Length: 238
Image (cartoon, rainbow, N blue to C red; front, top):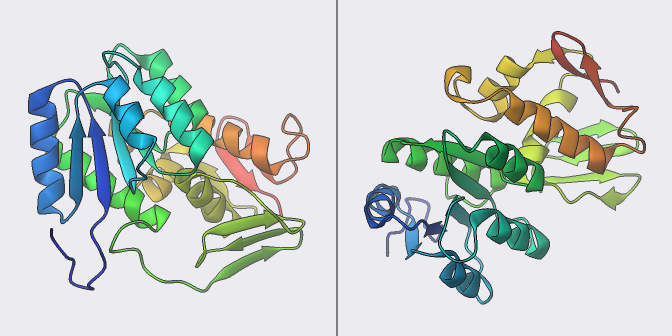
């Protein structure tokens, strides 16, 4: 089992996909990055494994024999905040949107490069604090009722901790760190997703903003903190 240079244990990544070649290639790249990989080929076995184990991240195909990927994602979200990256086909736009609304941290469209999967895994693990390269931080963003602790990755409203996914936290921290600055969806894809907008659907940002408002705002339909700047993007109001 590989150990990283800072002697932290490697992340455990569960890969659930019914195509053996996909699992094999993705696993090879993830292991080269120092991760411990568990490969599972169908949804029922994936659900069974997750019932007794907690990985650091799940790479999950949407279309699976047995239990489908979105059902597995729903179960993962019910049990905690383990990051999930969905693998979807280009024709499955509704599944991608549904997955994001259910709490997926990212998605990758098939066909894809295994190198891209490994890079996305690194990014999500780093931002969720589950990877060996996650940098320590003690910075706190204080907006009165809303407190965002970047070190512990905890956000509270009036002293109550919010249950945020890794991407939701990153999105909130990004806009809240620059009050009243207008961010386009393209800028947020680059800064929060570490991704070129040419390879990501801007709807990803829209869905995450909507989910964040549901958790953050007293009235999500009339947001107090995250305002829409029509035709441009979003702005945080302190």
